[in-house]
Length: 136
Image 1: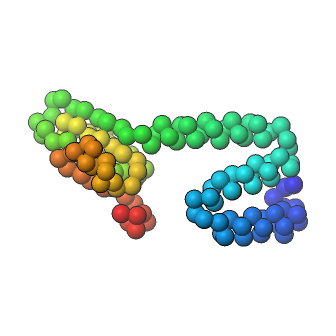
Image 2: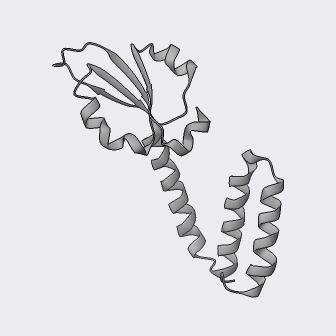
């Protein structure tokens, strides 16, 4: 099956979209993943193994990237410990922020009181792009 086929456009796609909107939010990604793999099995069986390998590698790399990054600067006069909840918007600021504090911990996740209590920083900063302000 290809994306421009009538079976995909008038059967597969509407059915999958309808079911995915009816599912709970937590199950949608797994459902879409399974449907995508089914779609590719229908078209080319052997390439699904390559796709599953790529999915696993990307998932593991994503987890490794999202783990907290910690930068220390022993020569800094400011002895504050900073916790920054960040997204990709602040990537370019990391090198500048790290110069001005003794310890900066960058976390790629939502604001979390539990994490703040665990790390116990002097300063907490939440850097989010405007479109994510509703998540704060």
